Image (tube, rainbow, N blue to C red; front, side, top):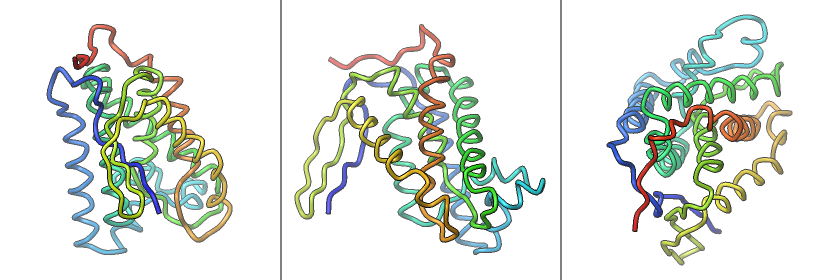
Amino acid sequence: MGALIPLTDATRRPVRVPLVTVCIILVNFAVFGLELANGDAFVLKWSAVPANIMAGHDWVTLFTAMFLHGGWSHILGNMVFLWAFGPEMEDTMGRGRYLTFYLVGGLVAMLAQVLASPASTVPNVGASGAIAAVMGAFLVTYPRDRIRSLLVIVIFIQVTRIPAALLIGVWFLMQLVNVGSVAAVQTGGVAYVAHVVGTVFGMIVGRLFVVPKEVAAEMP
């Protein structure tokens, strides 16, 4: 078994403290704490169930579901990816624009997942659609940056630097290959449609949120 876990941008560092990214991460963990404390009833109340939304109910869950997660591995994985790509995009867009972009990207991705399986009664949760949007924006903004990543192959562990275009590009292709494999069934799983749509949204719309003067400093 192997895994490639992005850690940080090795090419540049944010000029300012990534306050919004940190706050998003803290909010996600706070909501996860509420999930642990209140159980399945809390998750079912605030998760996005496609059948309910298509019936005109619980539209607010398109937003609230972005802050719910299915377990420790789910939230840790998402937050690691957000921390790898979020700080630079926050610096590049500015805090207000970045927060707006993140939330709109998440809403678009969540809605796409709902539309992909409109009759499903499986709850949809997770920040991965919004994070995919951040990754898409990063891909078109800093494609040549090298991402410090943790490469794990069985018991072999090494920190390496991977070009952003390669890392995000391969990840995106994997989502394309798997798209629809879960949406067509009622057993739950990875929201590949949200990943694909979120990334495409970020690639197309992300540059509109970039403030030319707000660019992270390249490291020597």
